[in-house]
Image 1 (cartoon, rainbow, N blue to C red):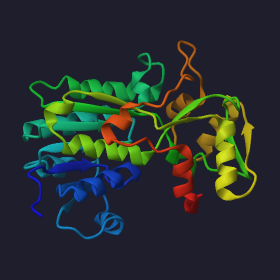
Image 2 (image 1 turned 90 degrees about the horizontal axis):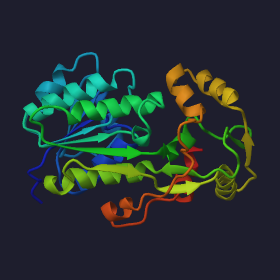
Image 3 (image 1 turned 120 degrees about the horizontal axis):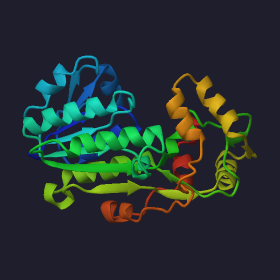
Image 4 (image 1 turned 180 degrees about the horizontal axis):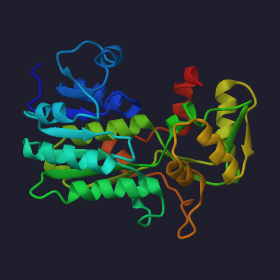
Amino acid sequence: MVASSERVFIVGGTGNVGVKVVKDLVAKNIPVTLYARQPEKVSALFDKSSLISVIQGDYNDLAPIKEGLKGHTRLLLLIADLQSMVHLKKTIATWAYEAGVKQVVDVSSLSASFPLRTTFNGAQHYEAEQAIYNIPNRGTFVALRPGRFMSNMLTFERIHEDAIIDKSDPDTREGWVSTNDIGAVAAVVLSEDVDKHGDSVYELISDVVTPAQRAEIFSRVLGRPIKYRKVTALEKYDMLMQHKVFNHFMAFSICTTPASFNPQTPTVTDGIQILLRREPETFKKFITDNKHLL
């Protein structure tokens, strides 16, 4: 099979979302280039393929990206560094357009849809989007706005002492998105006609479940009772800060409820079905498929 004339440059391709994107693009015979700190990690994640190239580097020196972008037609940005996000995304996207890239896809956040500056997370993502959107003489720009990652349940929201711990009421409806759905949507956008998606914004929620329903799903999947334990916003904040992963701004955004609007009215985004031509992945399926990681 002849490789596609498209070439996709990916910044941040070794996480849950990025791995799905790379595998889907390679399955479509589209060459990809990953910008990664550790090339050996790329080798461990993916089968050896002539379609996968690696450029080694980090965010301290972006020069390898500027040179590496040459010859590519699309760019995917998966950048989690909130403090430097605006600068990084604007700089890399600007270089990409200058190098002839015709489409930039940015994995942003659903919080970018919230009223401006109501959360630190949302403000950073929105400003990063705007920085790209306002680049003069740019190509197309697609923003993906995923909600709460299901994969959080495998990291900082893991089961503790046979309990799910959170600050919401047990029957509060919460929107969750599968990282597989995010990656699949990104791969579709990056492989389809540029004009079809233009400057689209795609909000992504795969499933809506309550904390009580989450506990029930875990109980069934793991075969043992898992309960839900509600804590205060302060207790959850302290728990997150103990991980030493979050700064104050991020932990505060996660743990507090905005007074200016109600975020607890989530709905499954039916656009996922249109883009992927399948139903979104449910919370139960994601947890079942990742049971070995719990």
